[in-house]
Length: 195
Image (tube, rainbow, N blue to C red):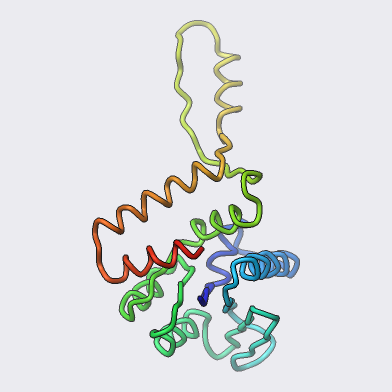
């Protein structure tokens, strides 16, 4: 299977920043390559820009790094790639609305980068990795416990959730796709089983 990664779309969500440095890019690519090698997938990781005017590709084992160049965007390259390879077993990893529409038009499923990242974490570090999820504080008693309330609110701002809990949400998405049953959703279901 080919995993087509909208690199900056995913990376910016992971680091919560618009400014990405070389160290973060290298770590990101290394992590994805390790996952793809373990799962026996082929990666096409597409970045905006790069050192050349035109598209530049680097092959690194089972991964192909693509720099879109100055003359086009990563989105342009990904859209073209989707149309040229629509009959292959591909999964688009992007939250870009226009790209997901292009993928849908050519019957290629897509997945949100953070959902995909949860799958990567589970495959590389099963049972060890935790994901932070926002949670609400529910006050259980009234009274003069402002210090305790403040401490509890601060401590529960981020509650760790095990990967198994995150996977429950993904499975619910898969079950919903089974019930809707469109062609692209059935294809996504088959791909999710491979991930």
